[in-house]
Length: 475
Image (tube, rainbow, N blue to C red; front, side):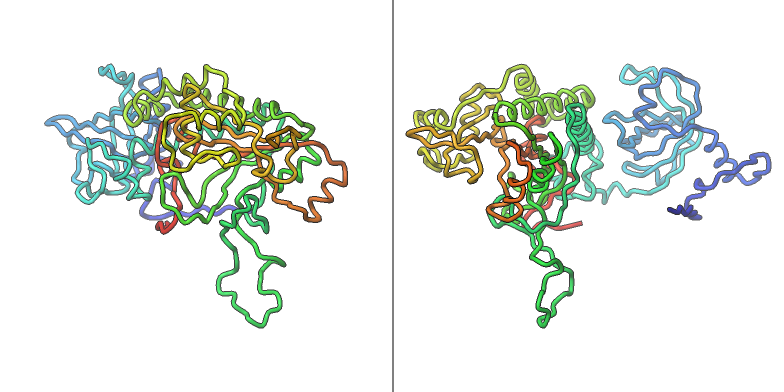
């Protein structure tokens, strides 16, 4: 393993002078002063209770307010929703110090007279690292841009308050999910992205082949021995690992070649999937699903309070009450048969009719959640014909059902579902059953749908860093 240090003349701060007494040029003197200042994040500066320390802040200007004697800036580096106020002498103001520019500032943390924050930075030196023309920049100062407008700029939307908050929430939610599984004894499995299986059986796959490979004389035209695809689920490989570990999970990207641009669909998204060995009870799976949802949500609410409040106050007003209700109440459990009876007895006109044996659609799922008081609902014991052959037969009459469960949540519909086996009657499946097989079960949770649920966002493209969907542009 080797490391290479590169230096660019455009960024003299990459150099570190060990003898400031011999630095005669003003530029090097300023540089040496910066090296004596501790580099801190904006979030750490805002929470600091100590004043008088020399610090260095690097970030992007969110506002500029010049006055006769002083210059006021708000600088943000992505570490928090709140920006740090910077106060400087007016002689430090330059033409390229504008909204959106990147800056490197050194100065002293002082107690702020404002009630909005405890400290402010009294600047001694301001360097504009990257200029920004505010006229051409698509986001304007003091304007609140809609999510639809921001969506047009996937390469720039991380600079808006809403989307930077979303990314911090997404990061903390990822941490919370990993912590939940770790604390409960699960082993993380890095399942492959390239596979030969269609776990969903719907045929909506992205095929993978080497670029430029088109040899018609090759008896095996595929790079691998069989056609290969981007994965639609890691469940195949989790089921393999459940033959050696009692509890496993994976958390990674999955792909669906659905020709849809609707607010519900993405071609690339993230799935949280788990598999538990030595279990025959749906209650065991439902306990894990509910525990995962509540633990992750409680962590996000406590760790990203300001970021979550932005969504609940300005984008989805009143949604916090909905989230608190989901955390407070125990999730409902109804059977598929009860769900059909509820739908058939309702006065609502559904686009797709409901009869026993039909697969529940999104409109049905949302109605059921609303009917049960807008708390998550487990629907269990689906018709046997709707589930894979290996699902446990409940052996009930007259309605023949299988032991299966889906979790429906407010505003989204289906969030978690019992995983479907990709093995069919393959030799792999038969060997797994032949050598030390145990009863097992698993589920998958769409990460983006989870974020939609807790934040109250209607479009799934607003909860992922780079949305991939049919006919979309790729960065």
